[in-house]
Image (cartoon, rainbow, N blue to C red; front, side, top):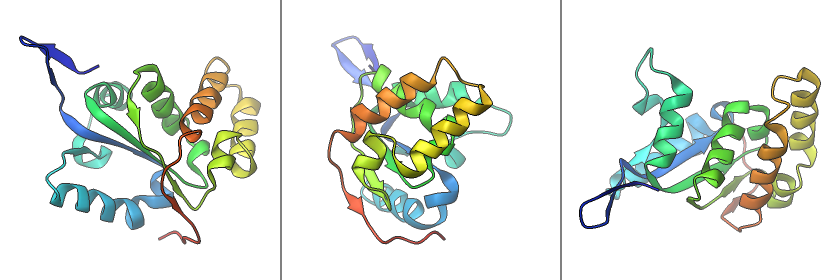
Length: 159
């Protein structure tokens, strides 16, 4: 929850927290989406605009998620290859946030059931054994979030 002050008014730094796999969507969909949110007066967290050089990225991300009203994960084909992206969605679920997923070039069922590239990414995470305690939490978070429908953008190309 956002920090409570005085008369039970929630204080949040961001209205929207954006989670995404940079190489998949940063320079295409995401910049346009962020600009539209900003143009509508919506304060959104975008990592490269909010994190200062030298700051602890994980701590800043967790704090930004906690201090946001809504979280918007942009699920793309390569999203699950990033442990940082997976940590973000797990934190969204753990923080009991309102989550509005966007499916960009990937079907909700692929995310929900970790099929295709998601299955391959999890096999790679498991093979590397860097995150053995987190993998099941990440899978559960993806399943929970992807069970909710959100916009689906098909036939997208990177760049």
